[in-house]
Image: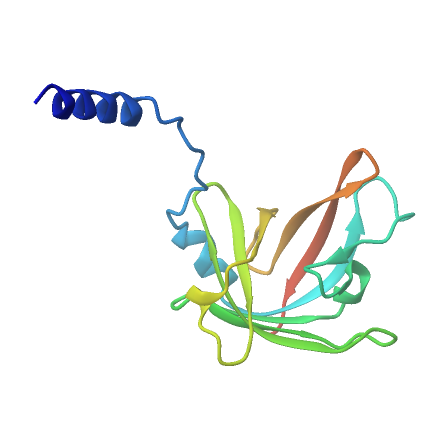
Length: 160
């Protein structure tokens, strides 16, 4: 009996001392998502402060290769597609799943053929900025030496 009580007390103490974990906000910002619905062209990719370094974005290609890329974002089911087709860059096409959380972050996963989103374990988080009905920016961070730099993807709406 004493042994059982000791186990219960130790279990309660161990559970009570569990450190708090930081979790990304997963509540959706539906208003921001609805403004992103449609077809988009990445009109420019800029490095804040300098253009003297190269960054591979999303483990796919040089960030500058995302200029002229086409993005289709469907807000009612948070799916889409990304197509890279810039001259002198590798071509790339992928389905994506995405959402915007209440913290203003665009959370995205590239999907492999035949693999469901819930089985895709890695993704990307970018900050949404300067959003209007016809444009927005996604801002990524990259390590450059001992500093952090921002890569700004400028999206412009195609058609309606």
